Length: 284
Image (cartoon, rainbow, N blue to C red; front, side, top):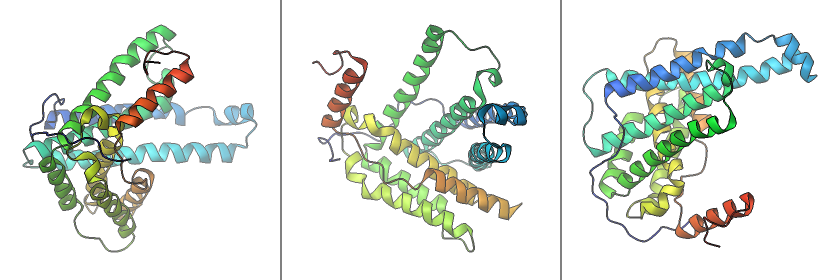
């Protein structure tokens, strides 16, 4: 996608939820609590469920274990990032705030993903009525996308964008030895991709770019989490390296994050109208 019309954005960040140490801890605690609910999935009657689907138990269990492992690796990355964020003096300024905001957005997304996997019963309540579910989901979806818009607006500033990339480069550090190098190389390529598409985001109008801004926010957040996981303490080093390899493989192999344009936004509205049978969003 091509870049949008130039837009001037200052380095100040307004409207972003709290990114202080208490907010970091609270976000990881929410993910921890959600992950505990996966015990309900782990404790399910495996033989009965396998028989109901007609799939052999070992295959069913192996597929589930892969999904559960990926969700728990996301938790390990969030823990490593939170440890780094709360261990000592923190960087200040707009870039540091935006970087933390992106990482928090990724952690909150992981929490939602875990809760979806655990199911409504594991979440501690009965399945809500459809209208109740819509009412509950709407403010959550709106809040998440408003947060993306704030972050993308800040990243439209060259000063903020470049400083965020520089902080990520410093956090990633030099390439490690051994098997950890594979994870580092994936992260390094993903970080280089932020430079490849820089001109699509810097100086662009967030009114359009925010439409695809979640990919930029997610990429920055995942890089922060991956760098923290790679730099975590030496305890259980082999297992941690395996976690870092899978985390970067799962989240950072996609193409560089591309911005949306005015044409893309219009086509999205047309597609929504076509699929839902309405004609209000695209003005048709």
